[in-house]
Amino acid sequence: MTVKPGKLFINNEWVDAQSGKRFDLINPATEAKLTDVAEADKADVDVAVRAARRAFESGPWHTMSARDRGRIMMKAANLLDKYKDEFAELETLNNGKPIGETKNVDLPLSIQCLEYYAGLADKIHGDTIPVDGNFFNYTVREPAGVVGQIIPWNFPLLMAAWKLGPALSTGCTVVMKPAEQTPLTALRLAEVFQEAGLPAGVLNMLPGFGPTAGAAIARHPDVDKVAFTGSTEVGKIVMEMAAQTNLKRVSLELGGKAPNIIFADSDLDAAVNGIMRGIFFNQGEVCCAGSRLFVEEKIHDQLLSKLQASVEKLVVGNPLDPKTQMGAQVSEEQFRKILGYIETGKQQGAKVVTGGAPAANKGYFIKPTVFSNVKDEMRIAQEEIFGPVVCAMSFKDTDDLVKRANNTVYGLSAGIWTRDIGKAHRLARDIKAGTIWVNCYNCFDAASPFGGFKQSGFGRELGKYALELYTQVKSVWVALD
Ligand code: ADP
Image (cartoon, rainbow, N blue to C red; front, side, top):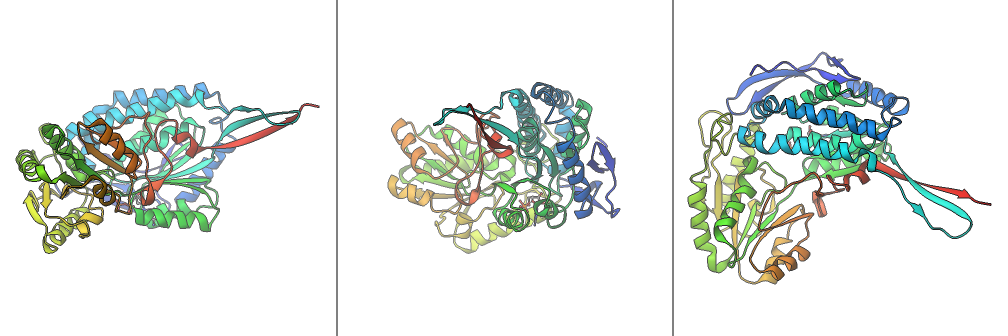
């Protein structure tokens, strides 16, 4: 596949950055230049926000029939389906994830997400409320307005779909900044929306860097709402910038350090598959990755040897090969950061059961890594590694386990493996996390909400819950006398 150079997409036109600057994209599997794209900064964000404001105030998007809005979105979903092989390859080239995953996970979930919100467009409405006195009171759900959306590089297309689905469905207009490492599928998605008939200015796609383009969006006084997915560190900065300028509404989907808990009574083969799915899916570059593995003491050694045998069979390599199960980490920076954590783990006394080193001479490949002898306070057990590294710890007592599982600043997700239904529900109640998976891991559906407790963020994406993020409620009182 030849990859075209990219431009900025503003007001349904492809334009260069005002500065004329461009930046290179690297194929993380080969370290070779893939292409280059225009680099947006504050000046381009200003133009895009003006286009989005015009489209919001006078364009047809939120004033057209909600059903017609849904039709355009459904057309975009159908086009994405039509071009899915091209999108899957583009995503794999840019991100390094295996083609089997882009084809079987990223694309189907992105299409499903756009279909879901296309279908929801004409089902967004307020209530009539019985109030005291001779009044008729009703609520209207109005779109939030111009929204800024800043997304990460781990699921470039899917994160764009999660954000655009509810924003467009509710009638908002959007300025989106894809991650600087992976803007290609987001740009191609903008083209798909254009082909589907989205009016000018409704969607603006601006590749660029965080501290320039991203900050310009978060600070912009004419952006009504900012939605951010990325690190907790940057999430805090985004919130501060939003507060310091116009107090725009904020939703944040941030980091995680999820416990994946294996009880002795679980189906151990299923649990091993779940552990692998939890930490090695997408090279571990998943905010809800099951990175802290808690294993009941009496099965600890047995489970770890089963896990080691399975991990050592994982096929790591060329992401374009359909047989590959783990591809390359997204960038050299990420590759080095993960290897740094692996070194820290070794220095702090954890034991490498398997992996713990690069997996190739060229490309940012890391061997799937399992640490045992991990202590709760070690850095590898506390900090988000965002790579294929799982830290195994053992437990005896369930109450103590719950405390340890909750002993983290994060609260995005958790996995529980047991055949005891009461225990499963008890833990589902007691663990402070936005998503709990029982005897499964990393399951997603456009209809089911996703988001964090604690410093994993706030606001729920997906499902009807995401409509809260992109609408505001107006209460109307009418005197009946
Ligand atoms: P990671 O550490 O996983 O790369 P980041 O939180 O740095 O995650 O990046 C997520 C998104 O936030 C990217 O689109 C990035 O460009 C953007 N970003 C990074 N720094 C800032 C910033 N200071 N202001 C706004 N956006 C930012």
